[in-house]
Length: 397
Image 1 (cartoon, one colour):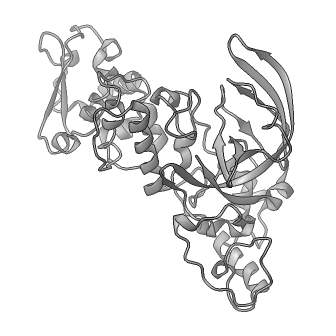
Image 2: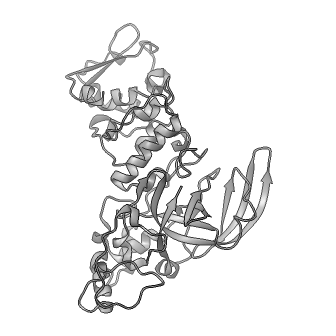
């Protein structure tokens, strides 16, 4: 359906509930799930009011090029003008695309996910009769597997029965994401050394070559407790099935961290891990229900989390809880590859607050996510703690 609108010479949108003096914000058309692609896909559209007059009586041949109309569309939809006027399907800004649909409704619950297939340029089977949670879960799993974009894990609300890392409803994406954490010019100019001016990928090679003879470090497999100091390690062929929870990567191995994958019913997720060491119940309101905890975790400043369910005593035992930062190969907050940024840029970004996930350990090296009532915002103690941090591969169900 997306392709039909994309290839149209003109798309006419009739707003039956908008009078000549009305506005977009009054129309139910913008709250329907399938109309999102009707708005974004066409190159040329014209809006008509209930008596078939052009919206605002504008003489424009394309409302997508009319500045006044674009401003009203942004107010009605929350979508930036650059997407409204020149949209390309794909998985860039994945969380933003989910947020656009977070206020939409469909007659059939599973359609809220199906209506986004074209937006993300994904070709998935439409299985009417499946639950809305499963339809949304299949979509999110495919986005992660194809793009590695972990921003879709940034949500607050009810957890899906399909998978603990996915929300039950798309309205969980209404909450705005944290702004991208990017170093400013002053920080970079005041703290950059001659070493940190080198791209991070080059620094990784230099440091690795000191410990592996003339072979760069990225040719060696991830270090595990059973590793010995092998001078000429073999190159591993990591497939998603072979990702092991024991694989550990340090700060200078971040470029070698594998991409996340969703292998139903498991999410194979690389994360910078922070073991929870102290859990203290600060207050509770079982009628809400709300349970607030003071948390301390290795490498992080003390923080407070709010959960809809009380943590069981066994969950609060040492080592069973982890606060994690999902990791991917893109430089956080930009489209740049990690190899292209400097060590200083990476450190400056990683020391800022981030959206954390709370994981609980299960048998057989598996974890599950514990949904929170509000976003969990964590921050490293200092740069030393960042340099000591480890990235692990988690199998989450």
